[in-house]
Image (cartoon, rainbow, N blue to C red; front, side):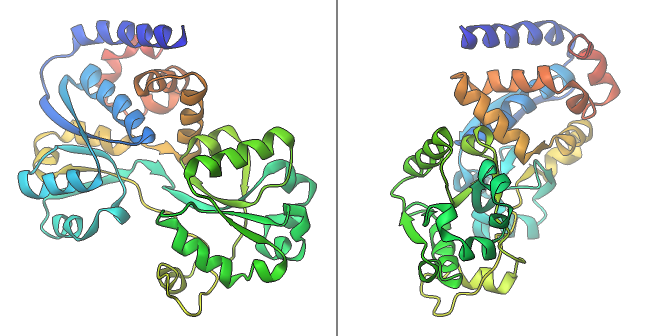
Length: 323
């Protein structure tokens, strides 16, 4: 019922605005990455571009490498609303150096977040556990276990090295290596349901961090050199370092930015708090909703926020939604 309801709402709010939208923008292409947050960003951006700015948006299913390769070889798609440059490689660097793309904004603020976490109820009961030093001094309070990043994931190498740098096992904390993201998420959910200790790696934006109130453990300062060395599985002497925040950007082609200044400004304005996106992902999961339905939910409940993204003409076209 919820899926039908929100689908109907999306169609209802789109139809009247479509009648007002003139073909000022024309056809544009937008890459939709194959993860949940990117799909929500695309759905919201597509709606605003079409209903507020008169664009005809063609959504192109993609992923980081195919999108960057296509930009390099074909100068398309016009828009990539959620790109993680840290995963884009040297081809992306060359696109920047050659001036073929324009980085508009951090679509997630402050970006992609990684860290070691404990539940808020544990932090409230034992505030000393908010720091890694407090956890090392009180291993029993976190259940004597660290839930590690899953096998085969990029985060695993850095997390393994940090486990050695902080000597978790030497302090009586077993490192449990999860075999998949599903088991890692399930362990967090199970702990919350029973209000038991939990200590482990996680990242945002994600559904679990939208569902469960978690506190990031203070691992000390971020040290660029140590963090870089911790990406090496053979690092003989890992050093402590906090995880850096990963930039998550909206990019467009240089050609698009020059031909579509108003639409480019809109895309520059579109940004979601990382915590907000995690909450949207949790809502989507709980309601078995599509990305479009999650976008509608956001638009319905955050009018003051997204209305500030629009120019005056788009505000007029979407005025029925802003009442």
